[in-house]
Length: 116
Length: 113
Image (cartoon, rainbow over all chains, first blue to last red; front, side, top):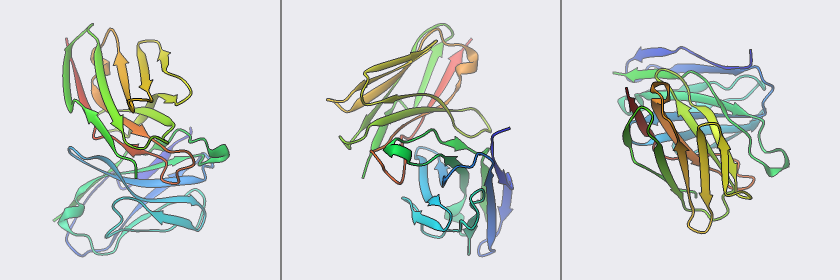
């Protein structure tokens, strides 16, 4: 089954304790992205990756890191989480920008993070 | 960069009635406008999209209209059913934009039985 998986689905942690949220897709997509969803603010992009070893900042990158060592995986790293990073996080993937036509993004099920 | 505004933030309709959600965008170069549906506890899922070379697209009970001059597009759901209850997001994308999509703030649609 074609899908985007995220782990963990729920996480409660404390300020300053490094954490990683994993994301994996099995559709051979070049493009992957992380979003955070907050009430009234919709989905805001954190980081995106056009392909392996190619990453760039989205609209709200502060406090986050990413890496893209393999095409299928795109982990989100919070080196020192703070309470304002409490949010619902989504990973997404798509075929990217072939022919300058944007393609459907497929979203993972989400990770609900609480930072105390 | 692109800015997308979405209205209303909440919408309640009686089962069988129609629902309309509206979005405006700022970048006149944007040419791809998808709509995503997010059910409780799940990630957003594409339900319909439209590209700037057409003014309307329909898929059964769902339709999207695009007015490029006014820079707004709308989602229309007819004969609403309880399973249509969800959060709906509009989005816009500029040609070749590496960031792909800018999302609206979402609309919580509730279909009352």
